[in-house]
Length: 367
Image 1 (spheres, helix red, strand yellow):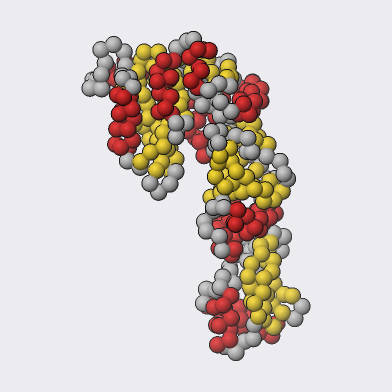
Image 2: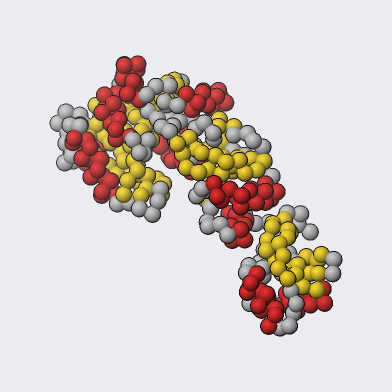
């Protein structure tokens, strides 16, 4: 018998009426099929999707029944997503989104009022998946560091963990930094595009997602900056954890990005700007740090339309009197039904290049 249990609404009937009640409720698709029926003394407890409707159906066949709530064993092992959806259905929660960061599960909540029901979710998930050590509810973010507002839902009260991206390890404290595991593929993809010998700057590095991937993919030099001191401390731990895999030296900075030019005093081949709500506010700073012909990976939050996004970026560059070839690359993450995070590649023009450059000139700008 499966040892994992889920709390569910149910109807209780006498053992004599058990089989008839089960068949009747099955015929009306009212039984929660993922859970096993169980006996309790002289009663049979049947997990159901809708108690009120189930009682009516049984009464129409002259079967006495009462409403109940109990724990039921799972019929079979479900995926984390399937189990979460089933718990949502039984607890009256709308579809929940979640991230597994290391061994910490973070569930996005609408507000504190969902916390109590989410604790049931946390309890079941921790029983079902032994790799989950702690569960927290996230209610938005706050301050300039985008720190999550957290509610402890279950397991250990410990917000530090080690997240894995491909074969790399990242130190993360979910109470002190923003981290999105859904960007792992993006980190890898960008790192594979950068050439050996490149001097690379990540202006808003966080715990080092792009930095560590790049430094383990190319022989060059990687500089990582973040205004959040906790992010930089965690990044330094990650550098140590991945030391044997590093191909490039990694230099970390804890600065407001506007202070980078006075401290670095050099030009970069590649600059990564992953600050979707604020990257364009620092585009002049990035320009001052980029070599002619260099490349910026620009991540911005904007309309679903790539044309609108490209126009917004082009307009900002013109406003700053900056000359770049703007290339829309892809939608990276969906933020809401109307907005997404997009990646655009900006190529700093060499003398004589403009936005009507030929294919050959564009290729030159990428070098």
